[in-house]
Length: 209
Length: 209
DNA sequence: TTCACAATGTGAAATTAATAACAAAAAAGC
DNA sequence: GCTTTTTTGTTATTAATTTCACATTGTGAA
Image 1 (cartoon, rainbow over the protein chains, first blue to last red):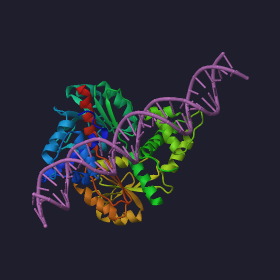
Image 2 (cartoon, rainbow over the protein chains, first blue to last red; image 1 turned 45 degrees about the vertical axis):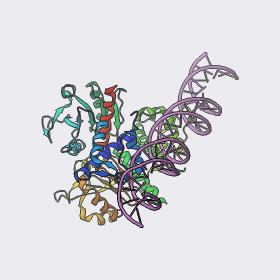
Image 3 (tube, each protein chain N blue to C red; image 1 turned 30 degrees about the vertical axis):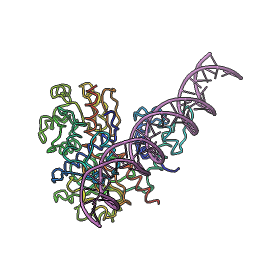
Image 4 (cartoon, chains in turn orange, blue, purple, cyan; image 1 turned 180 degrees about the vertical axis):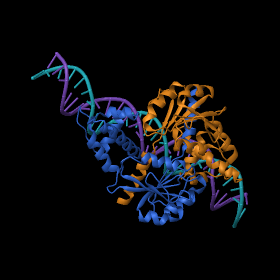
């Protein structure tokens, strides 16, 4: 398998989540159009993605749920699991920790960081909170590869620099401020305000018709 | 102006935010490559987007910050402003309210909803919290057009149905569960777990090289 | 058996998005 | 005043992504 498109990676992650739910319900097989309906995309899209990862279903029976989950895991998970830290234990940071607790995943949130002394030293859902000054040490000791930035926008740049210096390999930036990283660090940015403005735009557009 | 690409809409929202910061700093003009650097994209991309909205800068002086902000506003904002509600006042809901308070925006969060009786009746950052059973009434009365869903995944579908029944025009779904809406309702979904898994995937990929 | 159906798998076409290339013109330098 | 530089605006090109169209085939029914 060569290069998987970015969009395919995203969808595989989503297929897997849908499949896990099917598995829990005891469903053993699933058709491409069923997956498609759940994700509101087309069945062809699903089949194409699965073609790209080289999985082939059974004609007229669809795809084996369990097998497919495992294959997607082989593709997108790394064998040893990846440790993740959350930087900024505000509401968003806490929301993310809640999202993840209980989810059996190869991604483990193993630390959080904040500058508020009241939070440092505490543990939330099993995740210990450290001071920002300990970042380098903790990231090295716990072998943390990915950082999720949920700090206020005005701290985005300096936090990024700290993370990069500490040797982080990937950053998911939830602050509305774009940041710069060296090219050996993978950066993904998401901006809630943009999404909301986009929804508002298309709502307006529909109203005008 | 005909059809603006989805991606252009997203970028325009981001340009505006960057421009507002420049405006505050007293900067009157900006070059395409300056905007590009902030957003880590190319200058051509910026110029192309601005071309699409029909804005033309001054040769060798760049774009007028104030004018451009206003034009982007004309394109992506609706004249009367749009009222928004947050459904689910957990950590994520609160995070969103904090993001928005203080931001002068045509988007106004005017209500929130929850099922927890301790939260109902309270006000957070000026946003009152109502019970889910009041949704239809409040949405009609306050003329709410867009709903942001930050409820637990297991409530996603039923909350969506309530919103649709109440006459919502756009939904931003932050639960990891895809939902279905009639096609006169604009739906945008975002899944934090997918983003994180994507970062992890590309980190893994880099390590393998 | 044979037919019709329902599904997968995939090459080709269409669409969408990004990049390259370059003309034009204003400003600055000489 | 002429030349160089810088920056915009736009066409053309390339790349990425999605959709179409259809061949293929296992399954059940007539």
